[in-house]
Image (cartoon, rainbow, N blue to C red; front, side, top):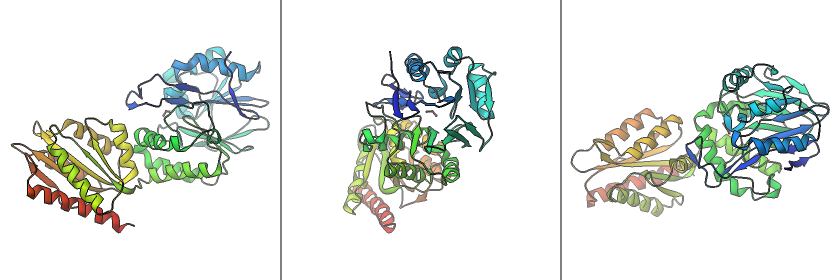
Length: 400
Ligand code: FEO
């Protein structure tokens, strides 16, 4: 028999850990796995908040049955329809056919489209309430965080927010479920990676959601991934992480992401990095775009204000891995970055022109003079890289 975890009176954690999947959304690496969180409130009426990935339906349904302890399951509140959370819906409905599925009209459309379920769906409006007895739920529609149906559900008695993906992290829950039971520091970088990879394009809707919920007193943040946040300082911290990321605000530091086939272009990156350090910049992160998953490069680009891209010319275009990375940056509508670039070629230069086109499509502040190298590092190229590093450092230091 699998037992749920009682978080507090009336609240059970019914989530599961995925240590098997290699890539989240078949895109983003999961070296530390991921949890799919589901919660149950047991009151006069019972309400489940989201389900889990279909691969874990059996474990999930067993835990749910134990938590219900013979009671009827009255409601499933769907805060988010992406299948890592809605995947067990069809099996849940088969097991509990009288359940009322609670969501907004966009949710109802997806419940029908993904799972063919059209009966027993209770469509709620923004701000509508639902009483479970002692516990009262208020639904806040927060569209495009990061799907159109996304919403958050606030429980008014204990002041708990069921936030969907918001404030979620990669990383399994290895015993500890709440922040009081674990070292929260372990999850912060994975929160930034989750946000930047999955939600990153939607800074403006996230800002709107934060403003909409800003007046609420919150004692518990129950996200669909990662720990439950309960410590007041941790709650403030995770909200401030989301606030900062969704405003595209970076810390002092520079990401240098480059492609290099034989190490020549890499020498340009190294030279720029040396000068940045010489000028007192301590957070300098070099990413070889062929070796490092772009998931981590994007995470770091969200973390730091300075961004420098370098590429060799390949087939009269950008180096393919650099081109892919630039597309991912563009897709996320990145803002507020200081941007510099460098490139190289052997017989005909194209990379630098392509990065210049990319730069024009952003609202980045262009820093320094781009450096173009023919074949290998000359003294002239070296000096130009040093000048680029110095100009970037000066710009960052101005903001101190
Ligand atoms: Fe965790 Fe948007 O799914």
